[in-house]
Image (cartoon, rainbow over all chains, first blue to last red; front, side):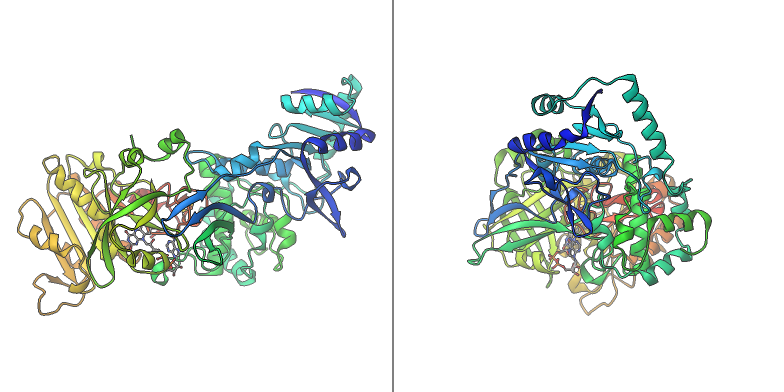
Length: 340
Length: 286
Ligand SMILES: Cc1cc2nc3c(=O)[nH]c(=O)nc-3n(C[C@H](O)[C@H](O)[C@H](O)COP(=O)(O)OP(=O)(O)OC[C@H]3O[C@@H](n4cnc5c(N)ncnc54)[C@H](O)[C@@H]3O)c2cc1C
Ligand code: FES
């Protein structure tokens, strides 16, 4: 990795330069909150955002995604191409960049998902450092730091950014669109100082000792029944989660009934029919079993394959939960015993 | 070469895109089940389509959807596959309305099947309940085509009533063979029925098996596993020589959609066949 320094006031010029060659996305204000949206005017970009309502997964794995067009008569696929325009997301926090890398594990591997990977390949990422909020617990999983998975990363060191340049394309674009300078010892010291301050600004250190094993050991704990009583099975946690990837597949016929599209839509393991099979058997009929499965899969199922937990500690699900269930509290209750 | 993950990579094929396949034969088995013979239309793909007993395909009917279905024919027979399908809903219902010559879609083969080469040289005890005979039929026929490589072969098959016994035409003939020990049972008999009456577990009593050399395979409705495994353990069979095949809801078949989660695994890629030792370590599996 090599590094440059860029004055903060140069961001608008960089952004307008970039918007000439890319569909540009970034955090913009929506009322009191922030959303990830198209940037038409550099002034809309808000690098001081806390978190976006929906995570960046929506740009790679949209809530409803067309997989293929088909013709009914001969059961033929008419087209399954993915149109992926060159895009850039300007302003992703380390948690969300880490989340995309966790999603990559699922959508690549033995069977590559062409829809996700095409969009991933055509999208550049500029990361930006953050300030932990009350609901953040990325420090529990080490996802408060990010070492790759971006083209360029901007770390805020006062009136300037300490710029980590990861990809050739990122280096070229910086060269083309903005004035940067070499780093000095003073810049590096400021970078280290900001990292120390950042690390010490989290409200708590979550104890996650042996969590995957605890999930098995406490599989029948009454904690799950209590959570099952509270959970509304609304699935909001899955929708706002940057790492939840479950989907449903449906065929939609055109008005004439001759052609149609096969689409996939976001789904949630919290929905009652998620694990139902023919003849009425449902492997997770109770709410308690579904709430538990969400934790079980994230902290153990995924880990058993990829050696990472499927959570980045962004805190979105805790904010979205109408029943006030927060993963931080669930982990604490598992570790220490008792209610949450 | 198994036409699984690696082949999909090599062909750079979209694993969600079904291969067009023609229905080349349809046989009524019972009131609710039919046996379909399918041939993938593209020559190259049809030749590359190699599978293991216990693997499944995603059957695709555009405009309706997809359903996971076990391959019922044996891997030793190439160029076509057979699917034994119960009319249970949208996709299977639409398939039942198709005619010979119609085209449907297939994706796969997917999942992990029975460990045929590991089973070779041993005795086998296969236990099926109801539609669970569909994947086991593939294994049974594969063993048949390779009979000299196996010791004693015992098949226990239970159905609700004589009208629901699948593949009865074949099993009726096999009853008189001495290289297959085939035992059938139904919950409720009728006048025509001359075989066992009662649950499939009832057939264990008179079984004489050597647990040190016997592999077991089980497929049936969810409630059946617990009881059959108890019987097999009673006979002192090893936990890691008993194989079970699980049905779970599936949308993708390739480890992406999350629907088939069983414990910390996915039934579509880590299963649907698991050995019992693995299954014991899967929460909520049995
Ligand atoms: C590995 C595997 C192998 C199978 N092998 C066979 C076989 O050889 N023969 C056979 O007849 N059936 C088999 N099945 C079962 C078959 O896939 C289901 O009956 C499927 O629901 C039929 O789809 P449908 O559209 O006709 O029914 P639907 O109209 O979708 O649904 C009927 C019921 O099934 C449930 N369901 C919906 N989608 C699925 C799904 N993807 N998987 C399971 N349940 C679902 C629904 O909740 C509903 O209650 C197998 C299932 C699996 C997982
Ligand atoms: S069927 Fe989609 S993950 Fe198994």
